[in-house]
Length: 166
Image 1 (spheres, rainbow, N blue to C red):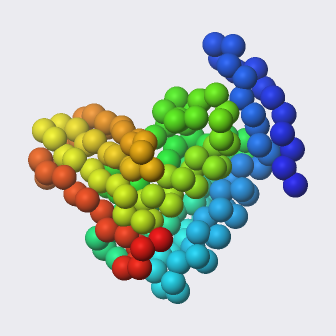
Image 2 (cartoon, rainbow, N blue to C red):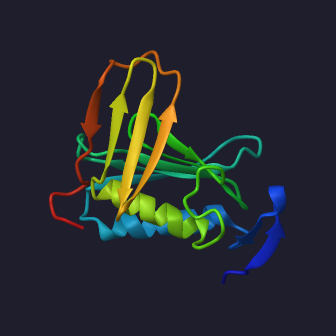
């Protein structure tokens, strides 16, 4: 059962808190996404960070051409969403829906579904990596700097988790 309450946030923003256990909602979401895939298409790992550092979920495809994805959160908030080699979004700063048009869980589901369908890519530059996730007509973009230990230059377009279109 979800309880919805409003919380005053920095800069006067008001945001909806969807529940008192965001990690449980994320775990439930990723279990559902995993069950929607054919058996053996991906493995789900739920982890806990020691000393109250939250935890997360990680979905790893068996197809090596597909992108791994993970979400890190604690009981009340999502901190990061990442996919592929090193692309990650920091919540709430890099959210698409900053004014609660959709919940954080719904946004994570949109991004996850796009990654699972192979609608994502990473471009490596001289000292950075740019990640993109294509959700309908919107593109989530991020740049991670500095990245020195990667092969330089090139775009990697990730494959879907399964050959069947989602």
